[in-house]
Length: 369
Image (cartoon, rainbow, N blue to C red; front, side):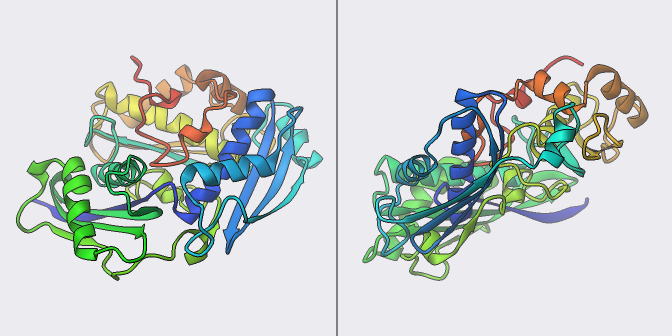
């Protein structure tokens, strides 16, 4: 039997990169609430008590970018510039222009807003058709936020990371080899008590007991103290957690980030569509796992290429799957937007704990193919 170990990571909503993703997606959603045809490409950078917001917005919406940013920082829970960042006192610099007319020329007629390749993936390892390692890492990160917000572990601060190593046997998850959690905390807390609390109230609440055994290694804040966090401990930048956002490294990645981009950007919309198709290929029993690649040219509607790999698990030829995809789905940018209804302000739902595997999102629906 083939045995190997695979590791995936996730981060909490207070991680500096995710703070930036959240601000960017919040600005996008506010634009779409007022003008569904908004064109948005926003980047956020976070450093010591400073938020820099830059990019391009073309919209009829009237938005207060600074207010959106401060409200998002507050909601996440950052209120102390001595340990991370303070939503009340941080400086906010804004440098926003309109979309380039050269790019708009191609997008206005329904073409892709840029060249590039995108990937979609699904497997039958979990009920949500996601790889097991990233599924567990996301659930741990979400649980860390829950116990902080509901005061179950009241001394936690917003910044945190999780990592899960899974032992596979014949390409199936057999057991969890290791769990790593690092979370910011208030000064003066007992680190042994913190480890005990996180094991009992986070890890044991998330990872099924049949995947844990006496050899499973658990690490909580392995460096010890983690008081300085957020943008004070490390800078943050929109789009820097692209593997966390997708499949935890289990599938390839085209390199394009999601957050802060409206659906005319195929980096985002095509990746969502390919996840939808890959998930339904698996859900319909055509394969146990499936990866799809697509490529676009700027200003052109039709994809340059479609590639599919089912890793030898397919029940029909892959060539037939590609024909099925081409016949059933309109893979032009406008076709994807219409099919998945992507002009709605739904994007702050995607920012944290992965863009895939959440039942309420349109690209996660299971249909009959």
